[in-house]
Image 1 (cartoon, rainbow, N blue to C red):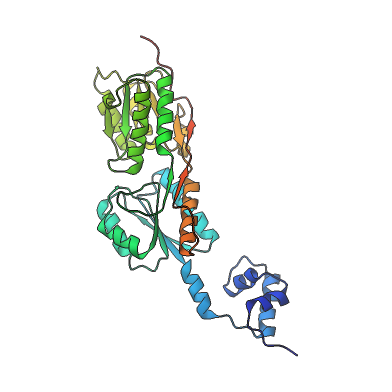
Image 2 (image 1 turned 180 degrees about the vertical axis):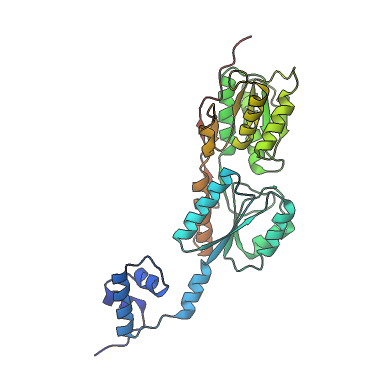
Length: 339
């Protein structure tokens, strides 16, 4: 005589599988083996089990989709963060909605406003401007949201970051240890947290070496190759610049600076030493390979997605995760020869 069954656990016991496997079959997960799927379906039929559609809907709504706001994917570091977010989203059967702002304030405001009404459970936000718009503040009140890579002033939400300041300090200390005393800085975009942290690290190293940190010529770029090329031309174009090393706030700008050197006949590192930041894949393939600071973009993206999912599920986690950076010594820095 069959007994009336009302729980998913009874189906799992009859089919000799876990409750999670029964749930996967009910939700159409294609990763379940055909033989296992058939056992579960037979158990459901034999026990006349009827899944609780309302409960399933509520569970699905809690982790159905999240958004990622990012400046662009042309920057390999941003791509690595997006890849980490996507990998974690896939592992948790969560849809990822990608929004690219091209580091434009009006587009950041537009997406912050649009996503207030979108059916997203949470949002990961990577600012390209450093500007906290009113729409973002409203979005932070209506959605689970966190920052990755860039923090914004006046917005108190969880933040996944890397040790930008100590990484910049370490690479500047290396350049100074090689005898360089006339150093130029290719800075990041104004207002960005990463730009400020890296500039602070460079200046700390200069001050520790007995140099005036405000005396180092600095021009801000936008993290693109083109701006690195332009700034290198501005800093090095003067015959009396005396600069023997460039500290570039990211690898793309360092690549642009190296292209300028090649175009005007400056040898790297014989005539000019150059460093970057990020350790994008191309940095080790350059000629010469670029001395830079590595930060784990994919792991940062994974951590951001995991923390967001924990927030959605009401699981408490530390509000800030600070990933270590690593100095990568290669061939783009040489000892300064005494004159």
